[in-house]
Structures are given as C-alpha cells and as structure tokens.
Image (cartoon, rainbow, N blue to C red):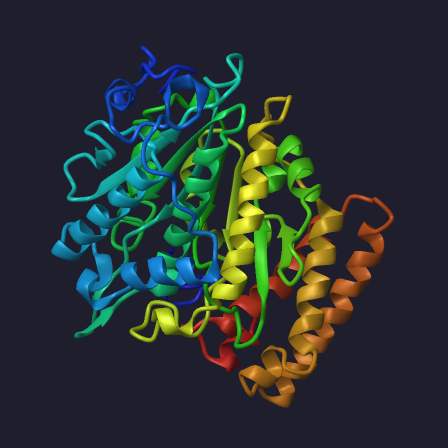
Length: 435
C-alpha cells in the first residue's frame, strides 16, 4: 500500500479455458505448464488428484505461523529484487504446491514483471462447471515490503504478510472444494514504492499482460493491511469496492458475517476521493481501471504502518481467522453465482456508505475509541462529534432511499478521511483537524 494517507492534499505519502490447457488468447501460456505440474488441482474438475492431503491454514495458530515466517528477519523485509524477496517467493511457492494449485505463471508459478526484478506468483484452481470454468475470480495480496527503513529492517507483518497468510489459507480451502468458476490465486510483487501505481507494479503489470484474459475475469479481490487494528483495540474490517458491480454488491451484502468480526461495507470513493484528487490504495486499482469489478479488503493504516514496529507479535490473529472465513464465503458466493458480474464505474451504495461511516464515527467516539486510544485532545473530540452529527443528518436522508447529493457524499468522505488521518503515522493531530 502507498506510503501515506494523502487524504489532505498535503506533503507526505497513502488464461485459461475451463480445462487444463491454456487459452489461445492467453499472453503467458501458464495453463499448459499447469497440466503437467505435480501440484495440479486436477484439471477442469477442480478435484485434487491422489497425493498428500491439502493442509488447512484457517486456524489462528496456522495464520500466525505463516505470518510470522513471512515477516521474519530471515526474509529481510521482502523488498523486490533482494535475497529476502527470493526467500519469500520460495516459501509462497511451496505453500501453493501444498495447496495443490495449478502453476499459472509464464514459468511455473512465476510471472516476471517486464524488465524489473519483481516477480508475481500465480496459481489456479479449476472450476467444476463446464460452462463456467473458463471464467475466473482473482484473489490476491502483494507479498513485497520495504526491506530497509532508514537503517532498520521493516518486516511488514501487517503490510502485507498477514494478507498473504489469509490468501494461502483460503487457497487451500478452495482447492479442496472448488466452486463452479475457476479461481486465480495471485501474490503480487512490487506494490510498494517506488513502483506503486507505476507500470512496474506487479498487479498493474499483470493487468496489462494477463495470463487469464480480463474479459474472462469476473471479479478481482485484493487484500492489504488485514492483520492490525486501525486504532488500538478496534476490530474493524472493511469490504470496499463491491459497488463497482451490482451483482458483486448483492453477494457481499448477503454474506453472513462471522460473529466477532466488525466487518463493514463501503464505497471506495470514501477513501479515494480527496481534495487533492483520486488516491488509489492498492492492487485492485489496475483491474478497476480496465473494467473488472473489484473488492478491496483492509483494516486501514495504523501508527505502525511502514515502520520497524510492524511485527508479527502486534497482529490480531483471532480476527484474521474470522477474516479468512469471510473471504472464503465471498469467494464461494461469487464462484458459484449464476450471473456474470457487470462493471459499473458509477456504482454507488449511499445507504451502506452512510451506515458504515456513522458506525465508525460512533465507535471512534465511544469509550476506548480512537479519541481514548490515541489520547486525542478535546478540540479533536469536539470536531469528531460535529462530524458525527453531520453524518447522522446525511444518514437520515440515505435511509429513505434518496440518492445523496455530491455535497452529502463529501460530508461522508470528510469524516472518513479525518479518521484515516488521525490513525495514520504521517500527520499530526492538528493537521488532521484542517480537513
């Protein structure tokens, strides 16, 4: 994820066909190598061939183990093109093999990112329905991090080892019981600066050189920052971007949220449309820009973001286990859907946006909320109380089913981005009051 919030406009920095053979329109030919892979998920049936049982990584203990391994000092911060990145890549490819994914890169699981040192990792689970197996859902997380941070190693547990752990946990579960559509599991490289939003960003490179045609890609799901708390003790988990397709939004709305997970849906515009223009946040952007519906899962940036303090010992593994359950349910719902999601660049869900921001603002002002957790001043509390009053007025309109005006949507964005600003390590409390 980008180096800083950038919500203020201030200085700083936030294929294949249904069978095992590759499609003639694929630019990478990854499918042909998967048909001979010992870790294949079994051709178009999606049922694993005889061999070692597929492991389960869905428990708190297993998610903690995977995250700790990826965020260990031995990985040296996983900066692209380094020995630490190679170690992480070897580790993830081994997990893909254990999950018995089909190799779906240009060379085994790997897709080199042009002339840069970055390497994406791609594995495929073939769908079970002969009419739908040629269609794909991408489930992804970037595995790179910053490496050195001013002389110290940034191990990037929350950013983004935790998401890779959840990615592989879900991959193994889906491999054991594939949906009707095929699923492409992607671990992107080169998401972090200086390649963020450039042509050498891993997800951007893939979207420009897809190994499954984008026309056959129904949804792209991306995870970033899913292990930590937005502020200490806050269990929020955000499902953003589903408004890019009415079908995806309906599927997300119908999910049963695991008990104990504070999952909330919202529109990407809430976090992206700043006074300084659009600020995309992560790997979903490359697909949305090409007309593919997206879902972005995140807990948001906290005070440990892009610092040496982002260690595996700071994460909430009980919540990560619940997040993995939610993602698995979403993949199954989208994978077995009878209709093909249609992209809607102007999609909005005003009622959900207002409800979500009202809930977050209420949480922020409650006992133990962001004001207490970060020891914010009375002036900031008063400003947040005014934000909540403004959001409450907007929510009363949205609850009637009336479409919000641009001014009312701006009210929701201002409240959202003030919370983001206060939670971030990049801005002072006084600066965040200027929004």
